[in-house]
Image (cartoon, rainbow, N blue to C red):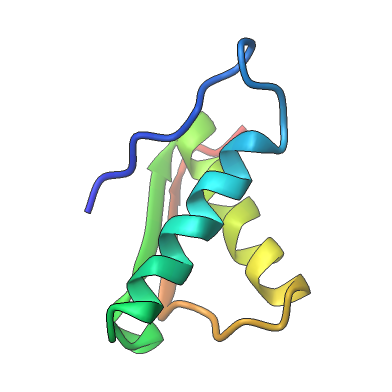
Length: 73
């Protein structure tokens, strides 16, 4: 799944992380197991992929299998 998340500057941080966390929760609700989910992104998307997992951990949610961050800023 490729997520169409809200973009800055029209939607300031943390809107993007909220969108990705909501999508992850949706996947879990649909029965996808965390060990079959990955986050990935390039540049700002790499930062978002990493930030999402940190937020999931902070919220006590099960973590995805992996994160791939290409040149995160």
